[in-house]
Length: 446
Ligand SMILES: Cc1cc2nc3c(=O)[nH]c(=O)nc-3n(C[C@H](O)[C@H](O)[C@H](O)COP(=O)(O)OP(=O)(O)OC[C@H]3O[C@@H](n4cnc5c(N)ncnc54)[C@H](O)[C@@H]3O)c2cc1C
Image 1 (cartoon, rainbow, N blue to C red):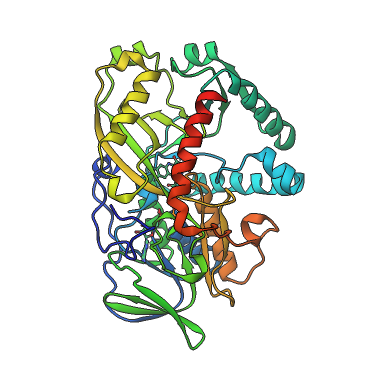
Image 2: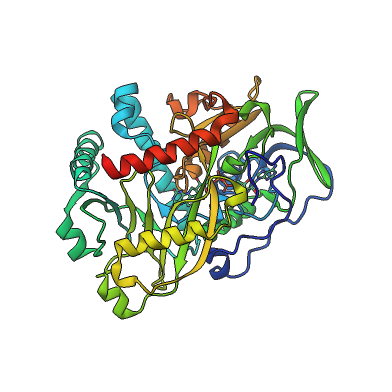
């Protein structure tokens, strides 16, 4: 598999991975084909995932600018077509308690409001006619051991006090009797407003809306190199050169090695792995008391997450291999299946029918950054969602569009500072390996 830490090329017209989403979403909608001529445009966007598509949509609808999107492979070929489809009011990995300590109440509230705006924008765009199999709302954050019950109760108290966010604290018995009999749950927070979608159909819907608003989306058109020439940016693709006044890099965890010096060594791509089982029978659903279609994530440092899909399959995810070379190794899918069976011993015979992985984009300071990659501010980026970017990437696209237009963004660390550089970037994989071991130890003993 393509490995962004080692490969300098993200591929060209690569097919979608063999995921449940790619197999169950029908044919991909038409885009504008491969770019096969030179173009001179105001704004070029690199990458057609949620970030790139949202930027193109908001530039057209809010500012009347018809941007060109260049995608190396297919629309949403990266994370946006591979994720678990959890729409949550969050991004990054930084807990609110840490934000409060580091930046104070006003900044913490400002960030929360941006995350809320992300979910609102996703809902608003879906309401424009995107069929993406929205499930009944609800998000359970499961305590994976007794000690985490107090931790999540404290989180709920902070969120209620600071944001008026109504979060319900559920006992182990309430979770198992009213939602799902997960044997690894010791209680949960229940957020009434998270929900599950088909992420690929969502991205295709964004593409349709962006194109209807006047954006053009060229697939199979990788940007091989970019450079500043006479105050503009020149993007070289295999069959055409795009000259643009402004460029947005929206390649997130799929950004190839050495792609642009302004983002070099500022992210760590980490593989997240998903399996989807065969459909559960009525008897299996009853044996697990699987009453809910809430999206579920646990409190481990190395998180597991799952949801029941509309056709009664279980989607189950967690960390994957460390390198792209090892990504297809069935060991990682098998390991997830064994964890699934610990939660649901009644499913001893269950098998998975789909497995795939994708590169989430970690930031050193655990929050995404929307910032400039060059001195003049002609090249902008949004990256570092840390595996939780489905809703916030759409808000990021809206903010990127404003930034392209020269408008000021809110005074928040998300928008006012660059992604920090990783110290000793050549050792990022070693650091990840160390973190995985530390996480395993912490999840078991603390
Ligand atoms: C397994 C998995 C599960 C996840 N689950 C969730 C979830 O449930 N909820 C949630 O909030 N988040 C989740 N995420 C994270 C979420 O999917 C991402 O944060 C989000 O999709 C990022 O979107 P993006 O548009 O920034 O990047 P991407 O969707 O990754 O798009 C980047 C695109 O850039 C293209 N590209 C790269 N280089 C070039 C180039 N040189 N020229 C042209 N194009 C290029 C790539 O082909 C790719 O299509 C998950 C991620 C994974 C991998």
